[in-house]
Length: 455
Image 1 (cartoon, one colour):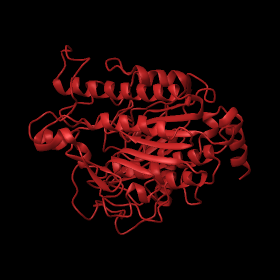
Image 2: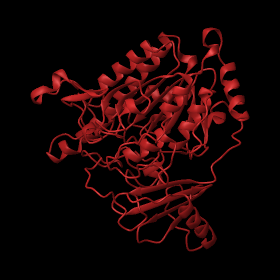
Image 3: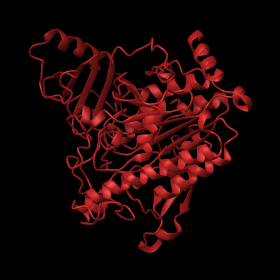
């Protein structure tokens, strides 16, 4: 509690005038299947991302940030609940709704009277369940409840709170309303309406996820209104479209920053940007074309670094020093504790997260994870642990693999045979990090008990 009050005082001391009596606005922008290497500030050479690159230049860029999982639903569950996939309710991509007892970051921020909105892809509870956003602390929701529905960039309807909102230009097979455009407009409107703050905006874009169903129909699986500014590039069409999707997302984020500046909210607002997992190989896209996983091995659905290490940018003018780079290992389940500390409220006692607020504010990060843990239930039970620079991966029915990330970030050299003591330590951590349940057993099958569509 003493540390919470110290950081809260440091946060409040940054404000002046009318903002002195309130905590910061918090915005979390989440991309969908965007790889570590898809942004210019992480080494991308072909795709233009000037606004996100500027965000990195004006704030902090993390090089060891991790998603909650390697697919969307469990990753978003970890982000919202502060629990890793050894403890979280959702550990695979089954459509499992959050329960009343699953406390979200939004419910925590409500302790400080935050106005809240979720815009975009939810994936943690379908209609008429306990997991819909408005039952988990959000004042407003506009978007997709169902992660499969979110494949379609031109849906006939979206959800507005608990009601269906017909997309006027997408009826009878027409394709005129591009959903990401609506989310951006809704975000700008929310910021305008909530500017007296404090507010929390969770902007969960669907870019650059593929429309898998459309691809199976032999149509363009990378849906975007046009492939500019890449129309003249001698690339496959799917790659031009993917690049255009990312650049379009970048432009939308530029509009959001312009709105904050217009309303003089820049210095009162901390903005996070990340992705829910590594890059996909879907919709005709090949992640190797843009080197989307950067220096890492693996993509979406892998627990190798390329499947779970993601970009993380945080911008807060006047509070976070510009052009700073942190190699502090942080994970999605740290966001709840971080947001709570920034808001000056207590996180739930049941959390796996540690606030990285001190790192953001240039203070010593006295609390650190002993290790980070993931498990994944799809096509067989998989586990991964990172402890310091050591990373262990174990797939059902296979021996554990062990890598030293500092010298081998792409996890090529398996050192398990030469490091039996480290292997034993990782074995203990894998057993201690999880609670088993009927839905998520630790067995060779390890898959959810009902069929699911590809996320």
